[in-house]
Image (cartoon, rainbow, N blue to C red):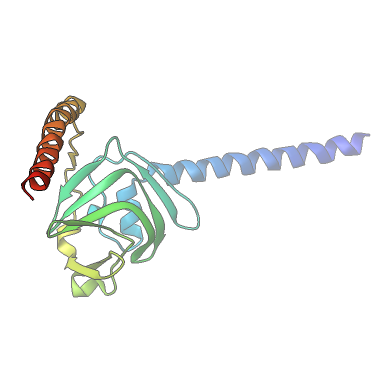
Length: 186
């Protein structure tokens, strides 16, 4: 009986020590910012907007970033960030990206992948599915301010619905009258 207690104490101590050290390691990882994580993966810190405080990154590189609100940031083109941005970090690239869209002309395209092939080239590539857009790497050196996306005013929506509902019956009545006029003149 005495021997089992002697075995139990060192095993318990070892378990508690490993638990404390793993907690300390995860605290160290959580103390770094998402911007430092990007930099350690060979990516510019400005890929995400200023003020990100809530994020997770696992050992496989899968990350989730949670913003206070959806917002837009202006670079060479405008980028839109959803409230949740996720992807998989690899050195020099982000795969399986979701939550970021890029504007080109008047269209918005979901960004699927971001990569820096050769850092000395000064270029960064955004894959939007059908095409890959290249930008100056220096544009993404520092995180940008991100302006809140205006939320549509529901009162304006109600006003539009009321106006259309008033106009639509008149238009239909006019079209019916025109149709009847065409038949009576034949």
